[in-house]
Length: 382
Image 1 (cartoon, rainbow, N blue to C red):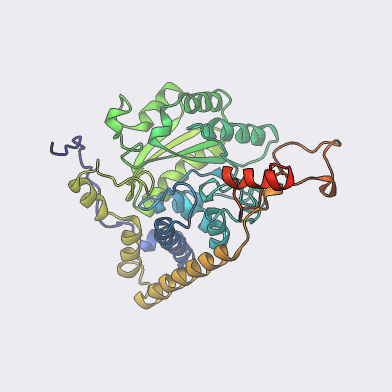
Image 2: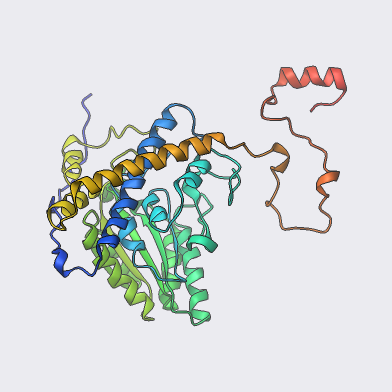
């Protein structure tokens, strides 16, 4: 049976960034910082996909290729004290904020590297102290929205002029957590900004099959909050729309929902071959790749030297290779630390020297035949 795809209307989005550099409030250094973060994320994810296929990455891998502009453009507007939370496809936001590639790679390798010490994979990055990234360590879709509302409530109660920004996808605007979080933020006029990246597929389901309205922003009217929809692959369109939402929330007017239309260039995860995506849709969005669009704008409109951009790209490749070597060189967490930080400290906790290791080393996994043999020799199961 021939493969069929749902008919998706192609929007009228330009293949070129239209902004006039003379009208933008950015220095050359700021423009290049944004490009470097976007390119570093793209290079990192190319490498990560290759490592996954080599069997060097544990678990599933989720990439954000095609969504770099929404991430960088939005977080570029945050101020000291603001917080944000990302999900699986916002690596360029982390790099823009200064997260080091080697630390992210180490997490994907499951290595004993702070702050998680091998307890989670790379997509769950959080570091409130260093980068203002609050955690979404859970599997419930959209639960980061009520969590973000909680941080925003703390800002309001403390009279702090800060905002909490939450990235989310279109699929995560359907579960109940999304509505509870938005409703709470709307009632209390909290400084919460939701950046919704509509990447055309919630796993494999297009928007028209998962919601009865055309735009995610249409759902905002039920809560009486500010919302708008914009093209998510034009970096300066993203910055303009995100700025309006952030300024609205920071001014005490309540939450904002900013929807960006973009495209996920890879499958939901690297285990997904995107067989449900039509050739026409892929080609349309490939011509509007945010990294390529921004690079072309930098050379054609902002007079950035081509050779300089090539040096930036070569530097990104070098950084990612160093990051992979660094991650591979680190040890895995010790088995006897498996319960560390799972529970609040107690005076009844055993001291490290009193602990008895009941776990086999990684080098000798608990295979029934081996443990039975050990039991016969020593009288102990482990």
